[in-house]
Amino acid sequence: VLDGLRELVGAEHVLVDADVRAGYEVDWTGRFRGATPAVVRPASVDEVAAVVAYCRAEGIAVVPQGGNTGLVGGSVPLDGEVVLSLRRLSSIGPVDDLAGQVTMGAGVTLGALQAAVAPGWSAGLDLAARDSATIGGMVATNAGGTSFVRHGGMRARLAGIEAVLGDGSIVRHLGGLAKDNTGYDLAGLLCGSEGTLGVVTAARLQLVVPPRNVVTALCAVDGVEGALRAVRQLRAAVPVDAAELVLDEGLQLVRTHLGLPQPVTAAPAYLVLEWDGAVEALRSVEVLDAVVAEDEGRRQALWRYRDAQTEAVNAVGVPHKFDVTLPPPGLARFVDEVRTLGSGTTIVFGHVADGNLHVNVLGDDDVDDDVLRLVAGYGGSISAEHGIGTAKKRWLHLVRSEAEIAAFRAIKRALDPAGILNPNVLLPPL
Ligand code: FAD
Ligand code: MLT
Ligand code: ZN
Image (cartoon, rainbow, N blue to C red; front, side, top):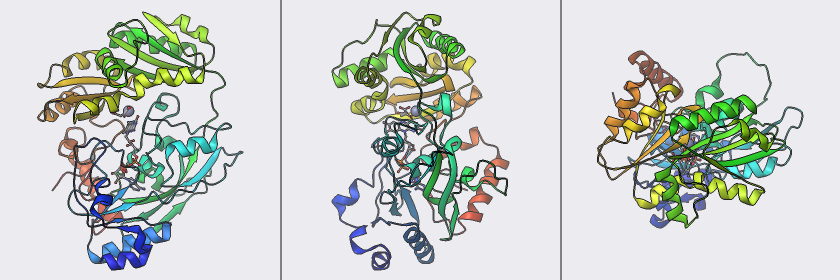
């Protein structure tokens, strides 16, 4: 089998050495670990199609992998699958300045895309793992991030897709037409399918016009209610590009981890706010204290208190991570309640304007059921942006009906009849 794969992509792109494989066999958090006989690194859509067709014929399951920054264990070969790494599909086409669109390979990192389209355009997407997360992985997970409040997530940015389905066939629809009602929306379907329906090989994205005058402020607020009030007030005044919540425990964790100073008056909670407009807009917002970035260096320094939450949590231990959406009226009460669950330490932060909180529990491996049932009880979602992966599939029934899960299974059978694409994620076992 390995020889067959070598013939398809070249011997140097079938990685079998244990040391080289190691980085592909464990997830970013260190919680999910597997093993693979080989990491296969195709360089084109035709090579991807050939590998998938070959694996299907040989009855070998495949786990697609991009930057391996996913947070639900979806990119790890838990059951001896072949890892299909898309990172070599890394070309970026020219920007179509009329449509504001660009086509790129699945292996392009978000950071590379952002740099390639600047300064005239912005990707309209951002997240702290930008330098490793790939566009293919972000399509597969329908990634959200800090710009969601203004521009929506990956599904909203997707103007076209190219992918290899489970039978090895190639579907390509990259024209980027603004209006195109010609049947099923395959791009929308593959977006968020977590590698279970097709391997994304290229995407066409709708870019956005960058803000004219970015203002970034780190504000101290009296808690979650205070944060929500401030976001509402700012939104009434200006277009808000980011509204990120950090609680004091999280801010102190980052300070300790990176050796940073207290950036603003100490408070129960903080907001990183970014908007397009005048700094005076802050006058319409009730906060306890605020610091405003005067230049790009200071802006990045303020963002560190938010962006470094994930790495600071992981520096303490391997967390159980929950990425949940709550109806906004329940957010503050949920935060109080979730912190009482289990015996671990709970760090909460997130994209508060979207009702999306990241709950990280350190030191309690049995807390999942309690947290996810609490979320469902609030009418929330057990995955806002990271996906279901392997971490949450046991709980899918809390938020999806039997009829919905049956429809998911039917779609899976149609696009991946042999069930070889990422078999361990999303769908609960029968
Ligand atoms: P991987 O981790 O390699 O894979 C993720 C899933 O997609 C797996 O199921 C995999 O099988 C599948 N997949 C990967 N590539 C393909 C492909 N080409 N075709 C088909 N399936 C594929 N996520 C957010 O949504 N918002 C955030 O704000 C955010 N912040 C983060 C911050 C940090 C510090 C870290 C470590 C992660 C963060 N994430 C965030 C999670 C992660 O970055 C995203 O889920 C991202 O979309 C994963 O991209 P990736 O290329 O690393 O995918
Ligand atoms: C974030 O918004 O920083 C993330 O989605 C990552 C996390 O949940 O740790
Ligand atoms: Zn997030």
